[in-house]
Amino acid sequence: MTPRQGTVPAAATDAGGIAPTPLQPGQLGARGIAPWWPLAALVVLAAAVRLSTLGLQSLWFDEAFTPVHVFSSSLSATLSHVGHTENTPPLWYLLEWIVIQIAGNGAVALRSLSALAGIATVPLVWGIGNQLSGRRAAILAAAMTATSPLFVWYSQEARAYALFTFFCALAIWCCVHAERTPSRRWMAAFALSSSLALLSHYFAVFLIVPMALWLMRRRERAFAALCAAAVIVAVGGALVPLVLTQGGHGAQWIGHWALASRIEAVPQYYLTGYNGAALGHGIELLVALPLLAGVFLGVWQVLDAAESHAALMALGLAACGVLVPLVMAVLGADYFAPRNLIGAMVPVTVLLAVVMGARRAGWLGMAVGCLAAVALLAVSVDTDLSPRLQRGDWSGVARVLHTARPAALPQRVIATVHLGTAPLEYYMPGLRGVGSVSSVSVREVDEVGYAPLSPGAGEPPAPGFALVAKRDVNGLMVYRFVSSIARSVPVAGLVSHEITLEQGHQELLAMPSAT
Image (cartoon, rainbow, N blue to C red):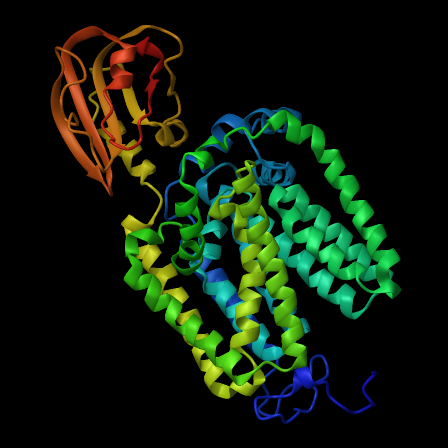
């Protein structure tokens, strides 16, 4: 039913059921404050959290691999590398290539696209919450998105995940508008945003399909929704050759991680971020308590009809985004990894905001929701202050390897855990793999790894070498061995001399003169 002129929809009423006087665009409130000030404040907060520490942490393996092995001065060469070395659609690489041509390939420049996408996600999530359930849900959803350790982490990573999250949020926002206003314009916007999400990450399909089905359920917009779906299917079809070329390259690590542990990591990632396990279950529980209390309060107070509809839509999207990949993993197509589910965390956040912000929960629901956002912010700040919660300090390792090496010893090889090769190549230009040689002639061997260390850590990797230095670089261990003369050392012996107990895979890097 269309509301009579002068009435206000239920979604716009406050906690006491009193409808506030609607404000026109640009109109100030009773105290001279614009009604959108909470959104502006949250966007500023999101920018401050992400941009102020954008270059604080070192690039880790995945981030460093792209500038070292994927990006080229030629866009066509870069896209060719994407097909043979990556396992992600091409949109992020295309946009990142443009950024690099303008700003260079420093850590801040490489992460700037992700940071901007992460900041821009906040007003989109506000819009989703506002359209679905009103201002209360909008404030809480935007607050949790701005402060979430998970969203902040990937907003500061030079990979496709923040862009993927942004386009998923944009597609959901367009879907909500297309449901409320079934016009060609909004259906076209949904088709475009969903296509961009699919071009950012293949896991977007788990959100796009249920949204398209949701839009098709009503006869009056079924045809327009079918046309939008046809556009998305065409884009997906165009990606099939790339999918076949990539062939799951680089995803083997997922199968080596126990599925039960990955399932457990999903809520852990949401509550405390990528490296939040180091905080322990006690901190996870402290962060979860206000969320659980808010959800209990919202359910106990009972959602009204509009809020129930909003919660149902968000729950359905979140369930599809998480459970469908899980079922596929059980059936043998295992790509279930917590970071691949980051797009599904948008409807999860909206769902929590809708329930905690239920109008019948009154000010207490909002207070608990704000407390949850503060708890999430505390973890995000703690990550910036605690090296144990950060990415490995490979730039620090590179400085140690640079400064600890006398100029009189030009011949050396660096043995590192697999995830250290790309960062060291990024921070120490000139390093390269030793190739297929059987031995190297060196006077210095440097070994890099992390705890838990093997029993042989610190022992010479070959006869004639002695340990001369040992450094702990925020959890990364550097051992330096030197010989008085150049010695021919078997490559197999260096590779098998692993200092990281659990990694089980060591690789060699060398200066050009070392082979």
